[in-house]
Image 1: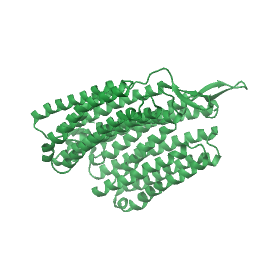
Image 2: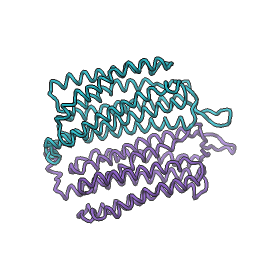
Image 3: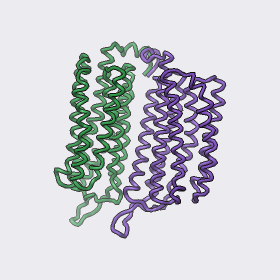
Image 4: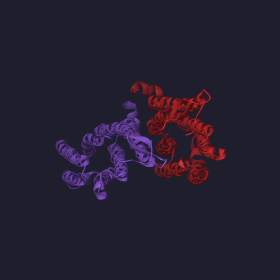
Length: 266
Length: 266
């Protein structure tokens, strides 16, 4: 790891803490609001809650790992810098997190849609598999010390990503057209959120190639903050939008909050 | 403990973290989904949730113990290796975990089946006792420094394992034949999952005998990763399959999700 200034170390440290807090808060929101949703859409809320719980755990670990990887040290000019402590920063946490959460993110989108039951299972399986492959194929490039390997694996992992985008925008087009009202608008928009946030990861991934170094201090800071922003949008923002879709569909299908409140508890 | 390369240490470290995350996510899933199950099968879901909660706790401890047992150190050739820190890696966590969880795994299978009530209790007791004996008798071999003791205790602990396999495939055969539809298929399959995953542990257990050493670095890495894979399959995979069986039987017996939402709480 390169030396970092106090502010370079601090901005990443605080970004990790912010992201952990956002994941945990979204988890609590989804747990508490799950009963506002008609039973047939609760599986989507359960999966959203799992995503932010898993990501919250990993951000807790990433935070601890970042903190342990550096130690504040006096330098020749009389100032202080964060230097490598001898403990390694474990970037693999992100990939384990994505391996578990990215298939769930596509599965929750399918779960909140109205599709023929037989179609749902097979489509979820194909999309979840493609999502897992995308993560697995990106990993060798992330840990490679050279930018050429990073570019190669990044390119290969784009293939399952393109398949997912194709299924969402072409394959699922007719099903979204059949939805009505607020749910239809939200479903069209969530695909754009997914495309926008997932499209942000490859840009962050490619930063070290654009800069020409995997060990430049500013690049490391930008990569970590970029992944935090992408994760908050793709997990918290996306999860809340899945909730909004499930709530709109529950309302459209006559799932009544006030009668439920009398008949059932929390 | 032997010296480990950075990647040997890291792959085990990340496997422990992954396994903890998988256990925790399965626990949250089972908690949230328990209300989808007819009351008479909820005990099976409760036991599945206990299994992954107990295992999650132990993997948290195993992770911390592994991390504390090694320290990154410069070596003569200018590289860095993980060497023993002086703190011991506590393998006993696994056996405490199995002693608590393995009897629950057989008990949840019985709980999700349809058997005469009188028969259920006695069968659960016999199978849970055999499961506990299997774990207890394997332990002296795990901590033994020599491969001969490992082989001897491994052999003795196979006796209760064979009894469990006999009960599942011969004793429970007629009861599974009486089940219907999806539940019948899933119950036949879960026995194979149990046999396959439980059969994986002895292979991992025997690795040091096949290699002829209990302190070889690659063997230690392979044993730890092997146990992680087996635990994820035998606890998370198995727990989700128990859920699927309970869900299928609830549906077959007319337990209706939409009316449930009115009658029962979230």
